[in-house]
Every structure is written in structure tokens, then in C-alpha cells.
Length: 366
Figure 1 (cartoon, rainbow, N blue to C red):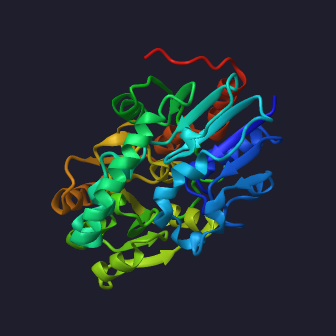
Figure 2 (figure 1 turned 45 degrees about the vertical axis):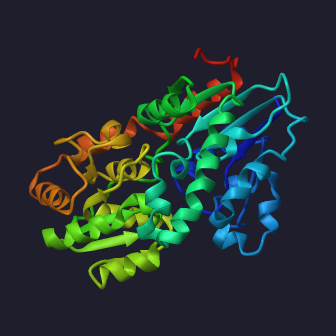
């Protein structure tokens, strides 16, 4: 079987790239197609693939400001040719699912989410408080057009597989398609507890983008009297540092080893935004640490209240601060937390996604 992999862009090792890494391990001869590849930004397993990029790769400043070229992404993804391949597996959170495949070439889409900013999170990315009244007014028709294109191309994959039941619901709502569910992989061999005693700080590991609601965690930690460390980078870093005004320690991007060390040392790990799945809670759980998360979206499928963490009812500073205090005062069994994470391991994901990719790919029943 000659397999083509399609991924939106390669600019860092986040949850989507960790799933892609396992797929590359299972299909070492597969070729990879992506809008943009920042060399050295992903793992060697991915870097060793033959990687085909789009014209976005050549645009000025694309490595840093590729999101500014969002309106060009539909044209870019549709220019790839898959005539040499027996089947296509796209891993999509933006436009990868809309790759055009030849007639008779099955296309399986592993969908992280329908395009957030085009559907239900426009204000989080392009609201007036983010880019000003004029900028928001300009972007509204642009993203409305993107949403129409996203919907109109929803039939290109023969089958959808979602990362969570929450995302499967969004696929049904926006694409009118049925999706089965395969949870993303967690490297429970790498992320594991040691003898480190927890220290009295809260931890966030996240891309610094609007929907993650990092500012909420900053204010909640201050209210709870708990120091906060933030790992990650992104377009919101400058504004978040300004908002924090010294109330949080921004560590930037760190190695996996350093992140693991922080998971092990943290008293609690925070997830203040609404996640489609959320790989960070399970990495923290694999290290035996409890999580405080918003009681919405994918965390309903990954965090067990009272057993592996605390779920907060509403997205307010007060509620999140109360959740942090509750977690700090509770006794969590590290072994039980770890055992929960092990049910989401890499081997399980690899077996499930390989079986789907190699098996018959039939169109779902709408």
C-alpha cells in the first residue's frame, strides 16, 4: 500500500504532531504533504519522511506568521496531487481534510476538530478585543467564506475518525457526517512518575493562543494564592505577559524532558479553556499529577472528577480558583491517576489507526 499523509502544517510538536509521529512509525514508507514545514520543529521520526510543502512555504515570513495567510490555505491544500498513491490519510484541524484525491483513492480523515476560528470560536481569535473593531469587521466575511468552503468540502473524505466524542458531535453538526472515535496517543512510557515530591505551584503546558484562556488561569492562581508556571509559546505571549505583570513565570518552549520534570513537580496542572480532547491532562496523569480543568469538551472524557482531578463548572476566575484550592486540599492516589492515563497509550492508538488505514474505507452513513 502506497500511503500519502496530509497534515496542516509542521511548526512544533503539539498533540496533533504526536499523533502524526505514531502514524509515521506505523507507516515508515508513507510520504507527507503539508502546507508549511519549519525544519527541525518536529521529531526526527517525522523529519525523516519525504515532506512535500505548498506555496505557503515560500511566502514572506511564513515560518513565524503563517496564520496571516489563512485565506490562502484552501488554494494551497487543493494543489497537491495524489495520483501515485493507493490511499490518503489526512490528520486535520484546519484544511487537510479538504485535500482533493483521485477517484477510487480512499481518503480517511483523522479529525482533530472542524476549523475552530471559522465556526464557533471567531470571537476568541478575531473579536474586537483581540484585533480591534476594524480588524474584526474585515475578518468576519473572510471567515464566513472559510466556513462555507469548509462545509462545502466536507464530503471529500470517505470516512471521518474523531479524536473524541465531543469532536464527533461537532463533525455531525458542521459537516453532517458520522465519525467514529479513536483517542489520540499519550506516551506513557516517557511520561511516568518518579520519586519527586510535588511543589506548591500550578502548571500550564499550552500553545499561547486565544481559546486556551491562559489569562483566566493567571487570575485564578493569584486569587487562590498559588504560583503559576507557563510552558509554551505562541502569538498571545506578549499580551499574556503584559496581563500577568509578573504574576506568572513564562518559561517558553522547553524540551520534553524539562516538561516531564515540571509535570512531576507540579502540585496541580491546569486546563482553563474548552478543549477538543486535551493531551496535556493525560500527560500530567501519566506522571501521576491531578488536573483542574473546565467541565466542557474533551476533558469530560479524560479527567475523572474526584479521582484524577477537579472539573470546574463555569469559565470564571472565582470558579477556577475554587477548583485549584479544592485540588490542593484533596488527596489523590498517584497510582490510580497513572493507571487511568495508561488506557490512552501510544500502542493502543497505533493499533487502532493502523487497522482503520489498512482496512476497507467505506463512506459513512449520513
